Image (cartoon, rainbow, N blue to C red):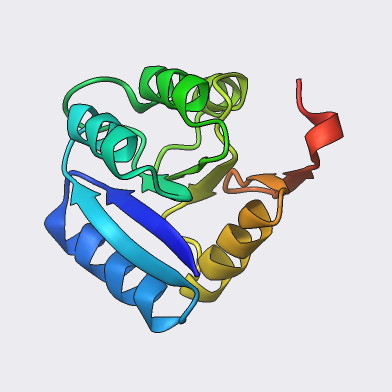
Length: 140
């Protein structure tokens, strides 16, 4: 069972992700955050296995927050679930140590499968047009 913190500035998205994750039986949601500052603080306090977060929220940039989190909690996986597929955002997330980048219009089944892959050590970056899987040795 993996522990998770969910961060999104929309409560309905957090609630849906909470139901999806807990419903599959592999995850326990430890907490929810509505902005970048809260996501970083909650993750540092609760030390989850996974931070599932939106890209663009109020507060600290999740890209900058990811750098700090990876320094303090290198075991924790970070997956960005977003509506933004700009190449620069994807590249910056990758360079910051983010483990996955998924689009919000992805099917729930694919989101769960991708999360499981990331938890097994595969980095997944999925812009709208294609899906790229990276193993640890392929990371920059």
